[in-house]
Image 1 (cartoon, rainbow, N blue to C red):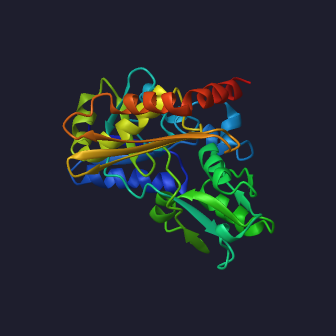
Image 2: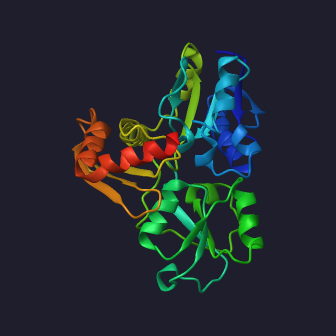
Image 3: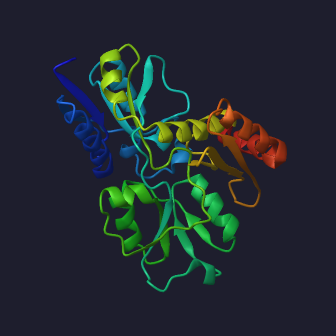
Length: 308
């Protein structure tokens, strides 16, 4: 085994937490590690909404290049940010146990209740969150917001016209972000693989793959694979308004997925169960079922928007 495993990470507080989490898992095996922070294009552009930047893997591209150039040995990502098609010669070496997969509404006024407000202003950079929110609250206004968790919270606190902003719950909890008020909408379906981490390395680096496989969580790996297969079959990227969640319940995997038009007016959704002993093509089957029940026209519409 190599003397030191170089762990590449974005330099935000959350990304560093994630890298240090994986570092501890490696250290438990008696391995020496080094953190290598790398700034991504997504971090450098704090103005454009993600879906307008037109780049797959906006938060992973820089680390992918660093891996391929052998400047780092491992890249640690929020799995939901990883493109469904990895670059050639890279492989997912491990998927640690999943954290909180839900979304959070962060708001300033303790008395704020979106169910009782005909008009409100909510901030998010995610098309998925925007579409789901507008579908439930068509009278609300959703505005774009960019930056890491700390920056977005600061923008929310300093903007007098904004009532709240949407975050991934795992990101808030992992860095103990001091939010004023928070709730988790139980009706909001998460992004595929939300709350999970992905540890990526070069496919030729079998030594690194072996040590990372020690902390691979099989149930999380199964579920996130199904969710990402669903996304990939719909030919969606991580910025598209597509949601999916697979959960192991007894000897079954319960899957829920949906897709929305950008304005939230149109939606298609699916709920299926698969036997745990036979999950082959489960994500594909769910995607085809969704397409057959109203999803195909929404997919065509979204592809047209993304190309324009």
